[in-house]
Image 1 (cartoon, each protein chain N blue to C red):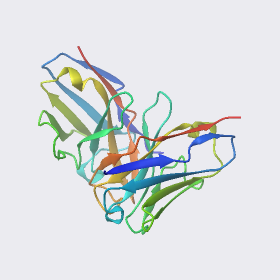
Image 2: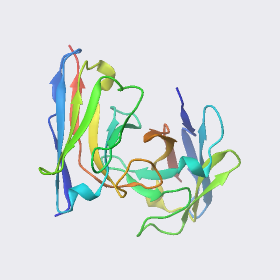
Image 3: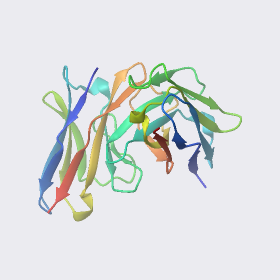
Image 4: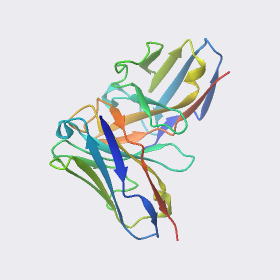
Length: 123
Length: 110
């Protein structure tokens, strides 16, 4: 089955770290760029980060730049998001999503989404 | 910081035509921003409706169309149906692999 399954979310105190993972199955993982998109409670979608098929290029939203790091392990078909210095405003459902293209340079779209993993940042 | 703007809410009658827009806080939207549009219903992941300004992914009904209208990207729904009652998000590529979603438009079909 073609799917993405996120994991690693949870409740964490402000200033602490968390590492999200996204396991891909049913398709050739290294054919595609991948992204993280989040949605705060009752809020809209926010693009967080993206990575090319070979990790050659990455991009980050201004709100997470310098704190979050995206990476992928094509051999293990897994996408990661290392989140440091977490803030209450990072509280959200974090989706892993597949780009139909191999690069994050735009012009294409996200065609496969996971169900998300919930991150709550609170003392 | 660049902000992508959308109407917070819009209403349309069943069978009617409605246009949602997507702008930039500074400057105009053009095809080089590769505008795309997503539909999201509560409790579900988003679904792509339009990419690269006006291209529909396979399986998307042709009542959804995309364009550049003035200095904004636009999503037009022709012959609105009850199940179009959803949240709609545009996303723009600002270059160097940076994407930004708009705040979303809540479309009510009534």
